Amino acid sequence: MRTRITAMTLAAGVLAAAGLIGVSSPDAGAASLSCGNKQYFTGSAGHAGGSLRCTGGAFVAVATCYKPSYGNYTHYGNRVETGGTSTVWCDLGATITELTGRAS
Image 1 (cartoon, helix red, strand yellow):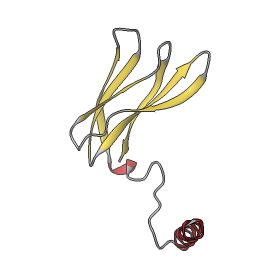
Image 2 (cartoon, helix red, strand yellow):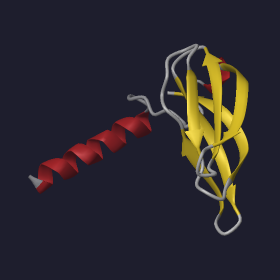
Image 3 (cartoon, one colour):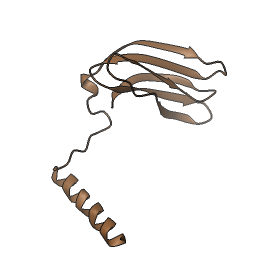
């Protein structure tokens, strides 16, 4: 079984290197999205939240969060279809420094 898994992993790596299977970058399709209607808010416990609406395909909201005791990190919102609204939350004590949409 272990030999079979190793062979399958090796074959997938060879195909990816040869460009025969699709490997997308994290920002693939982002250029086709048109996002707006950004809203920022604070939740009942004090969490920073944000939402946005995008068209051009299914997407998720992506927040770059900053917490003084931790630094920058990323949180992802719910996946929605084009025209929908995705909402994302940062940890307690953090702020949103950037809010964008990412095709999914």
